Image 1 (tube, rainbow, N blue to C red):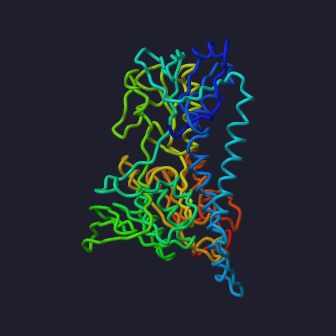
Image 2: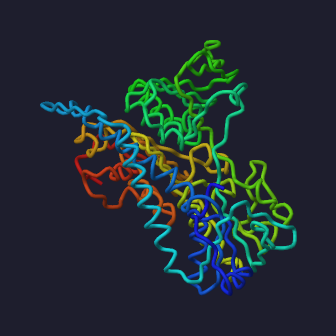
Image 3: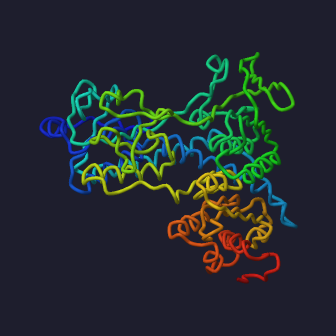
Length: 487
């Protein structure tokens, strides 16, 4: 399991017997599992969490936290080198010890895991813990779960077992050494070259990070970078990565991969014919698969989707009305904050009846490249597929005073709206710290704001988020003809 719990022994004696039939059994102790458990415990319900491995799940241990720590470190190196964009400045920075950076990253992970997971458990006496040596499996008798030979009979169950990295189906990949993102972040020394298979979030984030560390990086993908983003954003990001000497091979078909002497060799088909790419190390970043196979969930009447995720309704309820699921294990919206959100709803619905519906209509997503990619709502293609009469606008960052002053106008903002009602439907932002600006779009989507109302809203001058206002204004006027702060 990816979302697991710590090496804590189950309670002995009387308490242990009582916990064999808790109000709620949570399988998995990551973000989703803890969110569900705390929600139930705060209501005075008895909760048992079960899992194995390290407490905290994917995000704090091997995902968001360690990757963003290393990305920020390499941004510092790159930022110093880019100081020359200002006249009269010259900056230099270099990695003096990669090992020290990796160790510092691990110290941060350990500290956050302790403060955000281990240390908060004693505050919830209604939560007990079972550290599995094996696996949790449904027996087929209602909600009964077999944990290391002991049968638990909870009133309700929430499955929150997370996901694991997947390998792409390339001929020969099983016979070569492949890093996943976790292993890549644990490398004690930098390779001279790295081949990244996959142009999604993990591929572009870590690809750029390693390139800024001095590694020769090639990113290969079957479609385009960030295929779920607007095509204008994908194209612009690819160009910025190429400017940092990253090789992008998109729209390819994989043929085979093999080890040739001391290197990994990928043979692929491109628009220009067959191409062979060599690298010292290989990292697969082609997505994640839900951790469901080990559960025998079908025995309990739980249905699975084609991608292996657990099928749930709007209330996070599975086909078995007493079993709910949340987080990556559902195979959708694989973000830690959506896992926590969904698990809280699942706990409330499981304990009090289905009254809280899951919604991702205003879900934000951030890719921590530089510049960042932040999205919320519908893309143009998604809006058209839903039958909207769509209007769009794109503004480049050389129209936004904040980025002009910073002498960094890489990026764009694209807004999507309903042409009939003027209601904002979505946005893609490619900009430095775009993740901070996207929350304004999220709030606008939640209240059903029109682009006219967004354009008339007061924004602080010389901020990045002012670009959202300027983008909204371009639906009706040419912002190049406006003075500073003009509405």
